[in-house]
Length: 326
Ligand code: NAX
Image 1 (cartoon, rainbow, N blue to C red):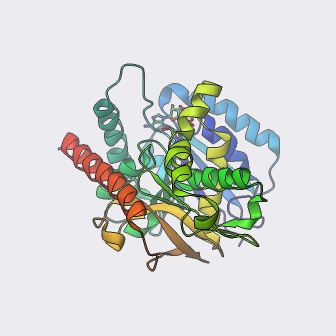
Image 2 (cartoon, rainbow, N blue to C red):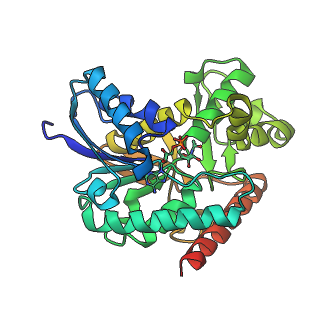
């Protein structure tokens, strides 16, 4: 492919972007032969800082980086964009209620949904990372009816990567031998990291290797609270690992993967999840940007209990977000 693809990144002066932009411009996300044009969106106040990021991108001398355009106007940013990576969001400030956070972000994602709807390429692929990611993606979808519903996703690959890594460390096995660990539901502390379909090559099923009391008391809460643990240690939220997960998500979605991977996508009613809810499911991705929700998994009572909790949280969030906008 010679034509550069237009990749829009919002929140481009932020910390995830600082780790992600070199992966995109360096060929790790879209492949070593795919040129990219970057369209970077920031709030006005962050444009001077973004200019510094652009200087650094220039100084990396990436052969695949065709051009860089910066703006604080969402409509300009999304013009003809093929892929939109939405990192920008309103951060949670001390003393802020959850409802205020939801409202601020619903406003941002409404505006960006409308801008995408008018400006983006017909088949634009979208990944929402800014929190609350699933509900932001839901709001975006609501205000972007021209964008195919299947093309709007949210990031839960970081949670999956965290879970795979923890299992490998717990069992003392190489990471590459661990497979089929999935994330269900919301990217929040109700998410359900599911190992019960997983296995370790040469050692057997994870359901035989890890008992349910370990899962319930240790493994599941550790993954659910991992983001908070990173903040407590670093005084900043996950950025390197988040950028790496965005890279994995986009790469597997657009170029295909042999493994089953977790992404938050609009439910088609699978596993009883309300249609349209942006919910993390295990997916099969084939080359060319197509995916299917894996349908045939058997869920025991243990899993169903966790999935119900995270689904209910999402139903409440999406209703609240839309109510705040009307
Ligand atoms: P930063 O605060 O470093 O950067 C966010 C940037 O977005 C800022 O530069 C800000 O000026 C910009 N911004 C704010 N409103 C904007 C708007 N309306 N349009 C364009 N830009 C706007 O945060 P960072 O650490 O980069 O994280 C970005 C988002 O990812 C946060 O919402 C964070 O909570 C979320 N995360 C989501 C994860 C996931 O797995 N889904 C994991 C990592 C991360 O915590």
